[in-house]
Image 1 (cartoon, rainbow, N blue to C red):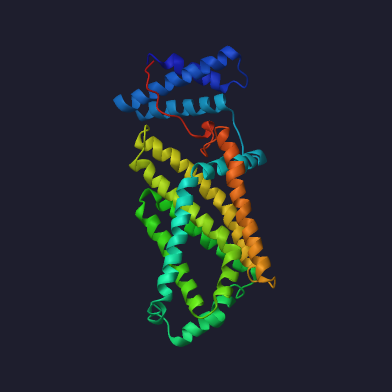
Image 2 (image 1 turned 90 degrees about the vertical axis):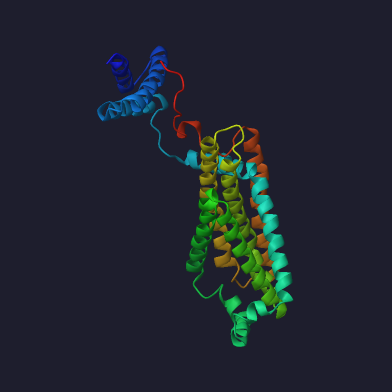
Length: 325
């Protein structure tokens, strides 16, 4: 074939351990040319042998140009000091609005349910209601060993957050999932308030619930933004817009694992502890405040440096070249 000398030259350069400046420039130029050749072969005459060969040559060339890399502690540090907080900050209006609407819905549900006790009397017997408000709600947090309970809570909340993000492509399931969780919290609050157990309810919910619900609202907001990315892609194509927001969504999902670990630890060890109610609530407020500071101080600083919460350019993969050689 007429382009075989270029293919062999790219293969030769990719095999070298060291390149001069001119050779590095030549490798990048050949990489673009051979990428175009591969695109043409695939569309015009997709010979499996040629496609496989060119794909392997390009893979080696890409490693040679970018350099082999492994994950290090600096990668993790960069993720938690730049990528994750920048993504949270950039998407703040989405998850912030989701949080406000969620709290409003929970409050309205509780207010309505207090005036309509049939919400629980039709589903629970008087004995079950008495058991719930008397002992079950409180004992739920101490029924299992602290470590086991914290792990169970962490896994469950991580699952809910992951579902909110994964279902973001469809939009409506995210709203249903968020509304279901919020309404359940509102009904539980109404049941406890109606039996003069409001102080117990908030004393047990607030220490871990502030950070936990914030994480769920973040996941919900990110899922909705993912849905909107292909509904209204702006100046980008729908595929490009969805891919960009999808990568940010994955970054947020990974970061929320750490956030939910903290809330799970609080729920497993602080909520059922013998600390005074005010002390447990203060711990919850401190955790929530630290998260918000993380977003609006660390995240804003990263965003001002141009970080948008996407992966590094070297990890995004290549786009199809548009110019023929």
